[in-house]
Image (cartoon, rainbow, N blue to C red; front, side, top):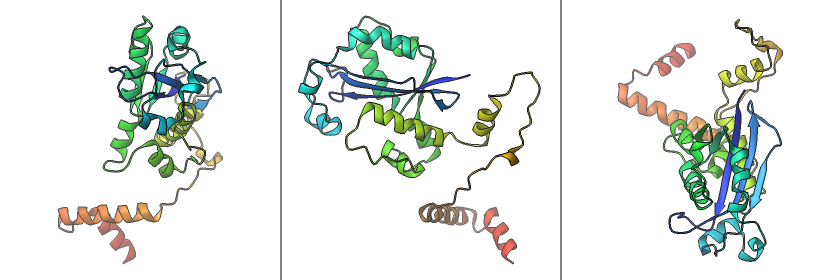
Amino acid sequence: MSRQIVLDTETTGLSAENGDRVIELGCVELFNRKLTGNDLHIYFNPERESHEDALKVHGLTTDFLRDKPKFATLANDIVEYLRDAELIIHNAAFDVGFLNKEFELAGLPPLRSFVGEVTDTLAMAKAVYPGKRNSLDALCDRFGVDRSNRTFHGAKLDAQLLADVYINLTRGQDALLIDIASNEPTTGAVVLIDLRSFELPVLIATEHELSAHEELLAQLDKASKGQTLFRQIVENAVA
């Protein structure tokens, strides 16, 4: 059984070390890769103004945040919510750096001392799609995740979008079998799954993906001097 928390923050600026603060925390809980509804969403009074560029991104004004709680007053509750979970974060270094600073100001230890591990979906996406745009928006578009309500960046909405992206990013045959087998009793024996009882989706490549595939094959052809095995198999099949 695996508890995961998909997490995002909004901040007053880009540098926690220079005094910028967390103004919003959004968390979505997954258990065995399924949404549980046990989510967490908090706005904070940062006791400072947001930088102009940051305000354009999140739209959270000083007036809106003035009556919200200070991070330190809820820090212990946040620690207990996150405790022992795997955190799923896009560009994790940014959010972890800010949360560590907030915990430090509250007299608490850093994030990694009480969570299970931290998974960076940006690093994952770069490994799967090297050289491609791998922002959250780009990944939503790539996987067909609806982001039409995303006028401003919001921590809770972005965490919800990232949860969907993460499931798509890690969705493979192994993940499917793990999901199904997780409901079976553990006996130590190998569980055989008859996939004929499931309707598996057929994903059709887009024109862009086909074009990118052809471009890659052309590069392989050039590098191998026309000896690309895939090309030979296709040509033999056509012949």
